[in-house]
Image (cartoon, rainbow, N blue to C red):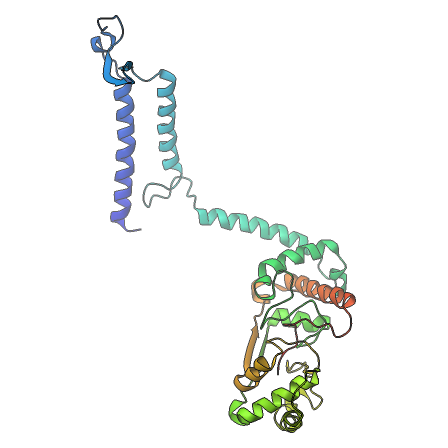
Length: 321
């Protein structure tokens, strides 16, 4: 705040307070003979204001109790402006700020959470997943840090993996999931449109879809199989079951990250895809990351146990080439 703006606020505020003080003094002053002068009918002086023909206003001072309330209000305002910010850039005697209050509250919450996390120190991911209190804490962490991308139910969306099924790009073992959350992942599907041409893209897309049971023209599927072996098998494997070391998805199931229809698969092959899972250790610390890893593993195990075989959800952890 500039010094001119600060000075304007100070002067404007103090002038208004002084104006209130003057108004209170003026309404409370002793009017002498005028205040007690009686009209012809023996009543106090009137202001001349008349409503509904015969309802008149007397020129009486404010009641003392009412005046006292106003005075207390003015005094409260003066004390408040001395203790807290309100007069331009003056910080107040207590040096209070909303930012400082927020940081103080956050520090208390962090200390409380650190105390709760300390009791879980040294527990394995399986032990954390079996601990109801730990999972309740992890659910809140997931909602605050992960649900924006993966959804509040962790079922993901287009381009964001479903974490409740059993399909994993980078591996579903405990340490693999922990590594993904802790240090992040970066996956790239290169654009192959210039290499394959439009005809080749259509053929490879047809072959890939046929692997998961989708009907496609037989001649396109046969030609696409040959092209796949030359261009795609290096990452996805000769049998197209993927490579978790590279983050290359399994193309033989029904789980698709960017969509499993012909248009979506063709677009992926032609234009490529790029996905990034940010590293969360710098943001949350290892204890919270381990809680999240256990929570995600718990979600996946529960979902897989309830689902029939090959019941992958659209938008899951696997995906298009």
